[in-house]
Image 1 (cartoon, rainbow, N blue to C red):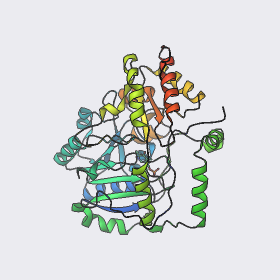
Image 2: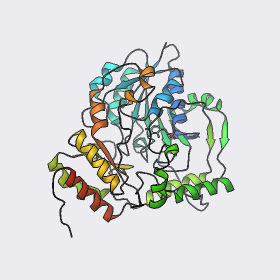
Image 3: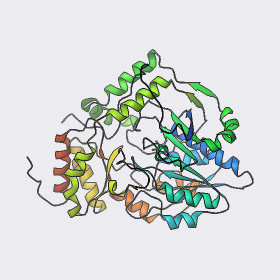
Image 4: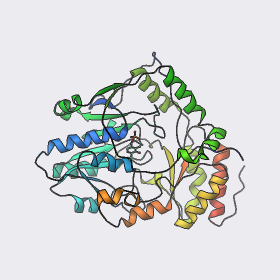
Length: 390
Ligand SMILES: *Cc1c(COP(=O)(O)O)cnc(C)c1O
């Protein structure tokens, strides 16, 4: 079969001048576009450091399962990343472990949304306020950010890279709550401003990106080892820039995001019976206090009953042409180069999470036949016969 359903990613939009547009966080946050999500996060950390200028060897709390860009953004500001283990079988940092990790040197806590599921901002904002540290919502994987409905985070971060909710082939944003915007202004001005030009080159690149998302091109792409598709690596952050993004492009991206039909609810019903065989759906952990609506998932995340079944499912789904993924594949501290920066630690829950996580494509090109195929494969690897459905 020369066909592969890509694991993640939505098509890049074209700017459309007539699109009317207001961001849902406008009343509470100032929006500053940045060169990438990592740059935006690092800028947020720089702001946190500046507010606690007396602190020697500042520290930033991040989850022990996550994107290595978190580490890059923190160390670029001369801070030490302190990895906080997860609450078992969730993507959330464990509350008691956060308390244990907080110190006089802590300048910020990064609340990282996971594949569309925001962190528990209400809890975290109380904790941060009591301890005088900045709460940064990393919403690179979630749109809109949870703070759009409820301005609990001091600063929020968005990403417009490929594989993120809104794909502009790069860029990010820093959302600064209005009570901080005056203080943040001089810091922002110090970073050079680049312009995102929607020129001929950009348009050709967009056509290529969009073409490569189809099943046959993606099948080929995945087999080119030098591209390293889907690999997780720690990249040092070189520099921070502000970005001037044409409003019509951002507006087209946001409007496109909200207009897409997604397979999420069909997965929920098709995979419900898997619970009886020990599979858990991470959709169930979303905190109703944060978002009134069901969050829009970037990928559909499941936890397998055990690591062996996860690995079997990964292999069988990919053989069937479904871009299922283990996502980062390992706990953050186990990614090359991270422990040298973050120090040693155990993170048993993050390791277990990494070993049992399976993500399924949740983008607009997933068909009902794909979902039936996923359900059948998961039944078989769980030792069950596939169900006969109408
Ligand atoms: C992708 C990602 C980032 C970095 O965003 P880039 O735009 O790729 O630099 C930061 N945090 C999380 C949680 C991410 O998933």
